[in-house]
Length: 528
Image 1: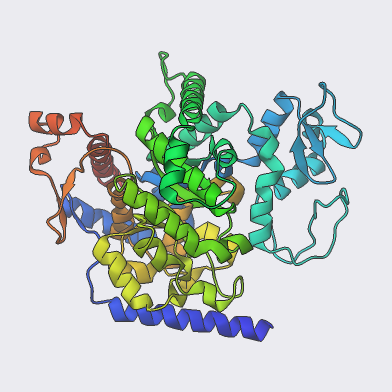
Image 2: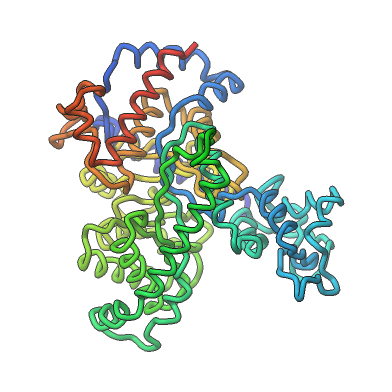
């Protein structure tokens, strides 16, 4: 079996290298003619001088402005230590048999449950829970805590990174209730600390209620849409009120209206509605309609995405049906954007036939504007044609290097990142689930340099892409007539001019982009 897996890895590498060579002569997806090319060239030379020094590289990348993180699941972004702290403060219990946080009953932990407040007193137990609720110290195939009622027993097992990762969400689920403001404050604070100015956070409030409203039997989409629209208004109002409360709590915790607001107060946050794809077709449709209604009612909800393991049996069996639903919703409301998990697969996880079409159908059928992961590119039918299509339509790919490594075992030259770049497909770097993966966006930038050999200009392009391809409202700072490079709009050739102030006053996107350009200029001037 080991020999077969090695052969598979070699074949995938050969395919990706061939794709890269075939498209190497084509232009990169997005190039930008920035305000000071000479300063950028000097910064690139200084960056090259330290790229082989991990410590110096980390310090340089920590200080680099990074624009936006566009692929970020809020529940997976929180570190396990904070979930445990909130559990202790809220009087939750730990089920030591299942390694799971659960509510107390009448203020007491039942027999066999341990008060979460006591966990921190036992260093070994505390560390074990953090390990189970994250990818910390995970080694595939090593002895694992199975969480199946055996307490602290260990078993020699073949638990994969994929299974351990997705199991982790269930361990900390109980600590999320009522903690939306704390969660937002954590991610905003961390974003500000590493130069991230914009977050698109995937969240799922209201989706369970939408599922409950779904038709029990198949009906034409038009009939379902009409019926659901009349029933979703209370859910939309509830979700909007919850977002208001959570953001108010976040601002209070960060002192945003006080005399010394924390840097996280300046981070702009928008939401991507998560639609659980592991449901029946009608239930997926009902969630999709809610996502569209939220977007229409609340400008903070800027798009939606399907979530859940792409390799689960129900998703594999119903993938084309799901794309049909998304295509219908897109036709109904083409202005509401879709960022779609697609191609988060690799050989060995699913049968070969399930690797042939997921990315293409997400783009061609569903109308996705961005693809999350896109790892199985090399296995798609006519992968070369798919790359050309994505480059032509400027479909950005959200690259999650650590996630793909931990969950799929895809790393180094087996990852399709360079094939996307060389084909002219725009890429952004993102975190996916930073808390469970135990990473930051800075870590992902370092991984891109050390494992993917990205240079400074390519990193900077990815940073600019993160706001250019974000779903944030407003016109762009950059203009393009279909060619390259993109240039700053005439109104803002002078960032401090009255014409630029007028242009950006109605565009959150352009304001973020100008702030980013100013930060990049300062970063390059101060680069040692």
